[in-house]
Image 1: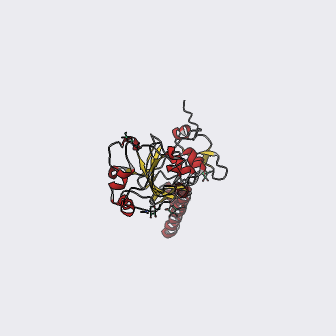
Image 2: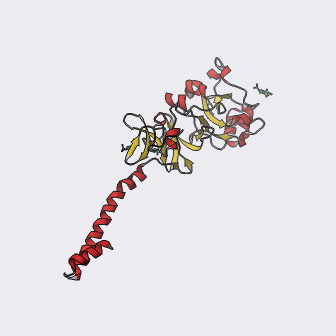
Image 3: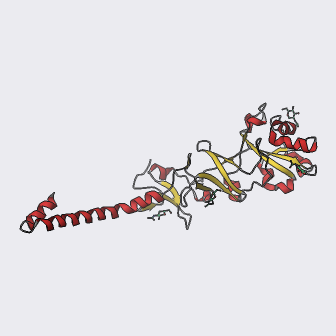
Amino acid sequence: MMKMMIYRAVCHKEAAVPVVKLIMVSLVLQVLLLGLQLLPGAVALVSTCRTSCGNIAIKYPFGVDDGCGAPQFRHMLNCSTELFFLTPSGNYKVESIDYDKQTMVVYDPAMSTCSILQPHHDFKMTDIQSAIIPPTSDTVFALLNCSIDSPVLNHYSYLCFNFSGHSCDELYGACNAFRVFHFLTNSSPPCCFTGYDTVKFMSMNILDCTHYTTVVNTDGLRGIAPLDWVYGIKLTYTLPEAGCQRCAQSGGTCGFDTETEGRLCLCSASSNSTRQCGTHIPK
Ligand SMILES: *[C@@H]1O[C@H](CO)[C@@H](O)[C@H](O)[C@H]1NC(C)=O
Ligand SMILES: *[C@@H]1O[C@H](CO)[C@@H](O)[C@H](O)[C@H]1NC(C)=O
Ligand SMILES: *[C@@H]1O[C@H](CO)[C@@H](O)[C@H](O)[C@H]1NC(C)=O
Ligand SMILES: *[C@@H]1O[C@H](CO)[C@@H](O)[C@H](O)[C@H]1NC(C)=O
């Protein structure tokens, strides 16, 4: 309004058309300038840390965009329509993350379950993964159709444990997928219920078992039939010692420098403070 009046005042003797043109040009310039100011913000919004993937929330220490989350967990997750946990033996679908209990349930699409029999492949994690996000003790690995020469039936038989009173026979007889083992041999080939450490140190070839499956939440499975077991691998993670609390409380997102892996508190597109955003100091 002010500008219009000034234009009018200055230009009132000129024709009306140039005045309108001047106003138009000034408006266009203002809109352009406004757009330029907003642009970096808009770009940053798109490129900052995603907070979910599919229906799974992504929070510290995890991140699906590089530079987000804790550097120790870098390159462990991949969000391509669904969330995947990346290991040397393949990409495992993430079924859920429990941020209170600090657990993550993943699923090996290539393993056998009650409904499908698939040739074994190893479950292999990096050394860092084994250290900071190992499978829980209530994840049981069931090694199936082991040869009588298998180390877990001989020298290392102590690695197999009594899994809540469940037997190989029960597993082989419980569902169509595993019944095949009965048919072929007309008897029950040996199996072994064991923990992650066994498959961590011995590949399936060394173990000499043709198939395996994994079951989670095994603490409560006494008397429950294999059809009702939950197949998957539950991992438990530890939070990095230098926590994220201070940054999160100041409204930032914990991340790291992608070159140095030094920790950062991601505040906004225009500022990265190392510890917290702004001058807010929590007591
Ligand atoms: C993420 O995982 C999917 C599914 O396994 C795969 O197709 C894709 O190539 C992966 N992307 C990256 C960057 O690893
Ligand atoms: C079970 O293992 C034997 C070798 O020990 C193999 O010949 C047989 O094909 C396996 N059974 C199935 C169903 O894969
Ligand atoms: C496993 O334990 C149950 C009791 O909980 C027992 O009846 C069964 O014989 C044991 N099985 C083996 C193979 O030791
Ligand atoms: C802040 O850190 C993020 C992640 O490392 C980086 O992408 C961004 O360029 C940084 N911003 C500034 C202003 O340094």
